[in-house]
Image (cartoon, rainbow, N blue to C red; front, side, top):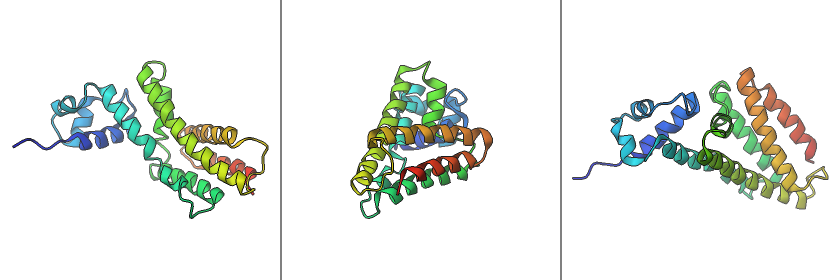
Length: 189
């Protein structure tokens, strides 16, 4: 009888470890221990730690509650604000210590791994595109109070969010996120 795959356990465990300790602070043994499997199981499913991290980043990109941004039952501006509030509540759950894995991996690995830099960039692009689509709806509904295009504003909001999250991680407080929302509210009707 074939052994059951532990791939999902490994990806979940790696996501937990990487988010808590970073890429360089996490060893294969840490991931295996967290997953409750032998260390060799990691290499049965992934060619390297970097390959496992790439899978984690792919999943992290779609775990950002992007489906919230597609829910046309909610008006565009409240939908977008609810999305960022959801992300803020996720950060608060860990006392703002973890930050965003895009920012964490981007800062830690962008000069050392083209593959991981590409994964972070792809994830941020996917997210920015989703935010921009909501902003296009808001513009069509007359709910944007800025001359910026939805694309410009979408890029700004994602970049500003990442900066606010980094600052929240440093200060261990929501204050930088509150500042983000003050600026966000100035763009919308």
